[in-house]
Length: 406
Image (cartoon, rainbow, N blue to C red; front, side, top):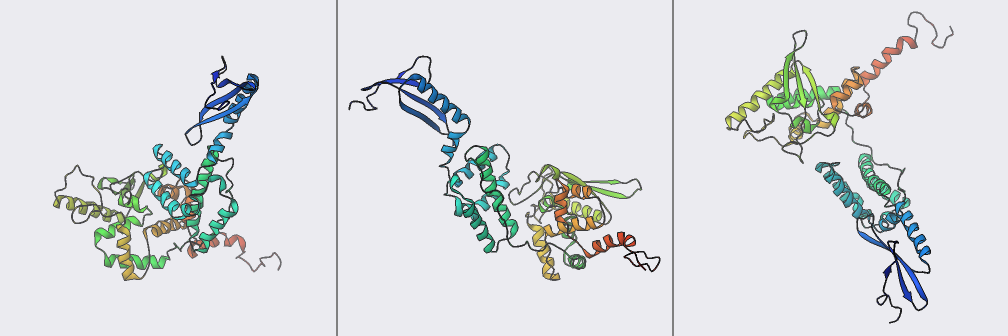
């Protein structure tokens, strides 16, 4: 058919890339045709036809180049991308670049699959509105989810939208500053009297090898760090007064995701903490026991010398501390977990007036605020604070009225 696009012959205009001329029944016309990769990484094309002069065509092309540089066409392409498509893209990129560990990706996937995907997975990024998202957050709260769970799900969604904004997929992340609520987290406090009774029951319930595991866990280590200890993780020496001390090098963790050992959570997690006193005897006993188990099972020296082994010489499951504590709980009726012991250590260290920066280093935190979040107020600490200022609040040497009049 005359005038049909399939019959037209396009000729490239000399010295003007991406501009073509063609004949019509009404005379010569010009076309702009420019290919580019869109924000999704796919080949795309910009095309305009019916332009009367090559100068006008050149102006159209230059305007397109300006819009492309400004990200306008990235947002047009990205407008069709769904939340699920973009989440998969982020995950792939962060794993390839090593920004996420596989355990991080797995944890994020659990939250995404359970909370975000059912609500927004098929929605376009540009269609997620503040009202609909606030309604989603409120629904999580009404379901009785913990505040930490709601916050984690929200943080993951914000990460998706922030990345989309930074990559010019969407013009703006509209989900910032939402109201995040949720049920208060379960109490992680341990009463000192309960702790003393719990330890006493543990001593009468567990063998010395597992009691060594408990005592090392009371030092505020993360569970994965505790299970990542090897017999060579310890250094014994004397201090200036001739007292024996022991350095515990924390440089590996064993978790469900990394049962054979993996890198630690953060750079600040790599550390050596020093102990003295009775716990050293338990450490030496644990080392001796592990060595004897390996010898009894003819395990070669080239094998990783884990500190915590079963009777067959295999490393204990990363969750084993919880199982041991369940056994103590059954006898004591006191619920304590490895993470609660970490909080308890932080609280007691803070109450003892240890320098916050030193507690931070001991726990392997990256900042003091994180350590502060681990501590809890105690009666003893409160009275200690009061006693330190009581003399200045009251004149105890006479019967003066505290308000300055007699």
